[in-house]
Length: 260
Image (tube, rainbow, N blue to C red; front, side, top):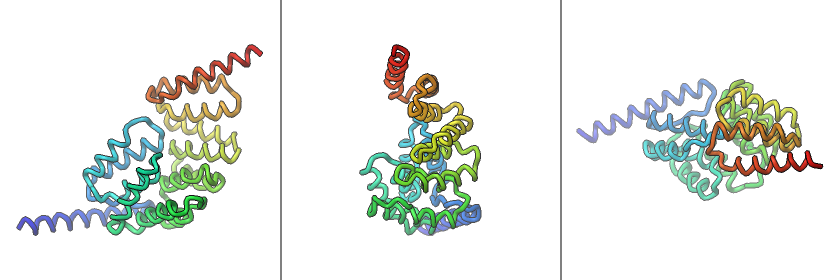
């Protein structure tokens, strides 16, 4: 009897996953396949923290999501893309590959794109992910991922993806942020400033938009503006522990210029 009940529970969970996936596919977004709605919530919280540059604790959400669903391919894939640590990237990619047969075709393509990226690190086109946007044209997060992956390697191509993200949602703060850095790398500094101003508009209580704009002001030689922005960023988020040293350096630069 217990075996029958377990099988029935798995069947119901599978049906629920299929229904959720169909709904997301109809909306033109990449499905998030998981047996746990709570795990999905942790995924979405982690994605918000990471993409917005908020110094919360995405690792806690990673761990809780995976504890709730050990076959959570989308979570493993997300970590493999956004983690700054290469060994963490690779270990999570292996887990995403291990369970990818359990998820939607769209999610499988994301894993395949990561596999290609590991095997061909010099590629700067993200062709597989751009092909996926044809299947999921309304997924702003997918466009953000492409922009994130390309903003250094191919800023012009990254800009196309980033602009699509904010077209889909004019209040998508982190979309403006990564787009701003793509503009900087493409030497479109006025557009970068406008993007960071929009990031501030979308996330006025987040320290990261002010820090991003400050970096641009430093590049433009506008040190007093950069100083005010760095101070605002640190006031909003004291976990940005690199800022106090930057503030000291900026003040020294301002004093040096005024004493010339």
